[in-house]
Amino acid sequence: MEKKELHYIHSSAEYLDNIIKLCVDYSPKLITALVILFIGLYAIRILNRLVRRIMIKRELDPTLSRFLADSLLWALRVLLFITFISKLGIETSSFVAVLGAAGLAIGLSLQGSLSNFAGGMLIILFKPFRVGDTIEAQGVTGTVNEIQIFVTKLVTGNNQVIFVPNGILSNGVITNFSMGKNRRANLLLNISYDTNIKTAKGIVMQVLENNPKVLKTPAPNVIVNLLTDSAIQLAIQPWAKNTDYGQMCSDVLEQCKDAFDQAGIVIQPFVKEASKK
Image 1 (cartoon, rainbow, N blue to C red):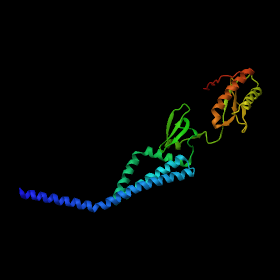
Image 2: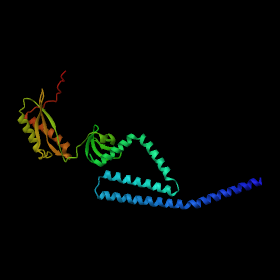
Image 3: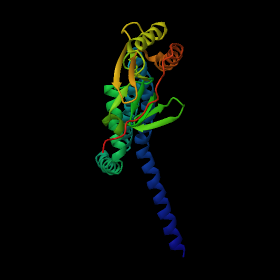
Image 4: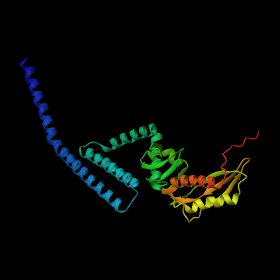
């Protein structure tokens, strides 16, 4: 019994000595790795702030600046982590192989997200629209509130928030109403065949000339758009600044209705023609 106890005590002491020796031998690597980690994190933070300030001074697009700064931040963090584990004595080659395999598996399972990521990159780089632009895409119309990496956030006129995936957004048709400074309307009014066309066009032109939101250049225009079975269709084509466009359309239609009423001109209802069989 005493021999067993002595052997156990001897084994424990030897095990403890090995642990102490391992800690002494390994502590320089651990301290060096921790110093590199903390200094690296601090340096990355300073560098990231410096890069953001430079991009702001260069007046780069805010979305592109944020994306580049975040990408640089995570790339430097990954490099720092690999340096940290290499200082600890861990083989980085096997670790990188594991990361590669994990990245492949994640990529296959997130193909839709990667498509949206690629779409976000295309939108940020080629700029078919910017934050604050009013666009129509994928059947929705709204003002661009934020361009994220995977989705674009739109706010509609009735304050609904719509998130459109960047993948289908970058591959579809996009109508940007804000890219040009001015925008032309195409307002349709039906009048009776009893109406003198020149008189009606003169009244509409007078309304357009008196509206302060209608631009003088390019000049507005009024044309006969269509002759239907029941009415003469006039197309009113005034220009306005993008900021005034909605209010201008409403004002012109209202003022034309009032002017036609005073002149005794009847506005015909829109009647759909029967389809030919």
